[in-house]
Length: 113
Image (cartoon, rainbow, N blue to C red; front, side, top):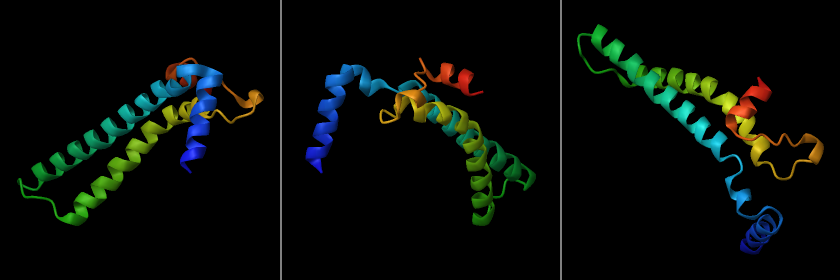
């Protein structure tokens, strides 16, 4: 298993040098930023509003779980477009005809949108 990983690393360095390790980095960072901030932010906003409406009492577990599901779903919706550019940017095994060669995440979003 380790030998296979070393072979992949060697091939990447021979074919594309250090640039191969940065492919998709902008899309990955954009996806994490949009997904995580949406998920955490919406959870905090939802729970704060419900706690305030509930006279400051803590939420029961089932309500926290429900708002967690809602926040996670909203994060997925917001984080999916950057994912659509992340995969083609990182997929070194795609045939040349399917390679998108996006310059960065925003270029991928513009082309996919």
